Length: 276
Image (tube, rainbow, N blue to C red; front, side, top):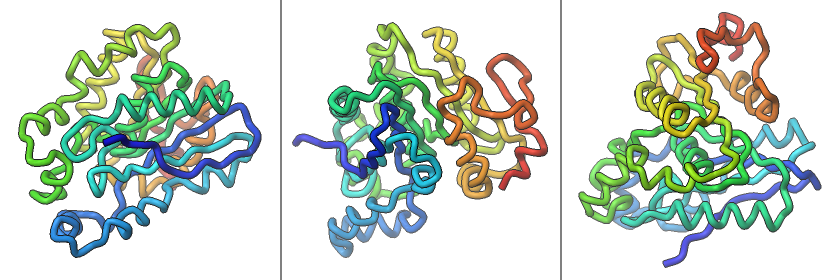
């Protein structure tokens, strides 16, 4: 069954496109997945939930760009922009995104995503040569589906343990990087993370892999606070919006906002930590 990219396209007659991928909605959890499986929640209700777009204020604050807000309504709930009820879909979605970019004539394209949306942004950048920069916030490279319980496993993986294992290790598979390795121009990556995020180690490993194996430009932006995964985003909305607005700059932050401990690793300053 064919899958399609769905979402909201905001046009300002610009040659620059910012694509924003959805994170998880607060109300969705194991109990919510149970109710979907038990058909207590209509599919249309779940689909309508995805019409709420994260970071919509970004498009209101800068009308010099076009925006594409992409929904992640796959597997009757979510798909991390990777899979749909037991099969991979990221190649189909990336082909559709590349075609959309070409058909619309965009010259500059930037991808933005948080948590599972960060996974989608990364995967599209690995498969679409048109991408310039990628900015992700605490990307969920572990593909953390456990919070949705057995019903989530049923929806996401169609009770296929082998497929589930493939999904969980997708960023360790060479096939994931085959197209990216051949790109003449590779996207620049910016990973916002925190030392207490459960995904801190996978993100740092992925960052190193991009640089060491593919000579891609990648930057780690690290918040040295005790905040775990979701609060790193929710507690710092002004910082997130500030960095997203600057995604087209060579350096998307000011000199007093991050201290560079190396060329590609940057620690947030007190000023930045306080930028709620």
